[in-house]
Amino acid sequence: TYHLANVVDDHEMAITHVVRGEEWISSTPKHLLLYDWLGWRRPAFAHMPLLRNSDKSKISKRKNPAARLLWFQEQGYLPEALLNFLALMGYSQPGGEELFTFDDMVRDFDWKSVNTVGPVFDLDKLGWLNGHYIRELPVEDLAARVTSHLARRGVLPATPTPEQQSLVLAATPLVSERMQILGEAEGMLTFLFVDEDKFHVETESASILYGNDASRVLGAAVGALDDLTVWSTGSIESALRASLVDGLGIKPKLAFGPVRVAVTGRRVSPPLFESIELLGRERTLQRLHAAIRMIDGG
Image (tube, rainbow, N blue to C red; front, side, top):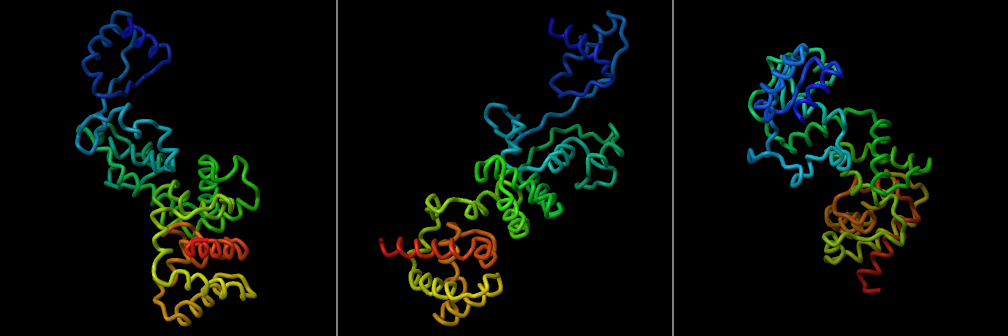
């Protein structure tokens, strides 16, 4: 009954080419006989090799989250990157190019170039492709996609305010070179949107605040930033370098590490001085004071 329904359904939809996985090869003779018995013209049949895990095992829908299409959206893969990647899984461009658009594939497609060996589903390769497509996007387009992703993840409301959208647009160039997937923007940009009563320092980053001189460094940073008359990336960098590096005689890495963790909550963030500018004077000073209290046990 199933095979009959399959053939009837394809015929009624005027299917001319049946493209399916190689596990259907054994059923193909039955389908061909059904077409002949029913007096219908046979469609062309093509069978694709199955995708494999890195250990060459079959991808399981139950065990592998990447077998679920929405997983890629949740992680922040771009549709155009995923299309390019899936095309590479079963097909090679005439010139061997790895980067090509869907329109390129449609124009150049030839069944003779379809792979006959089961390709390995390599998420590292997909990440590389996705990073390329992220960096190729105009800033406004990428910012819109980052905004949508942050809204889906609950970092932003379903309908972000114009101020929030502007903040994402300003922050996007700071993280575009550091991302392979949009999901990485969540970790790097959440500090800009979280309410102060919910802001916290990640556990794995907190040790930086308890290192030598951290309290003294943060106190000096408060003094330097509190006196600024112009709140800009350049003036912030100059003030902090003069106060922490020159004034305290501390190497930049040791001087700026505690400041980064105090204002962003993480070891890894967008560039520090730009982050402080975007965060604003009031919130930056509030977080520096909070970090000092945490260090001092208050």
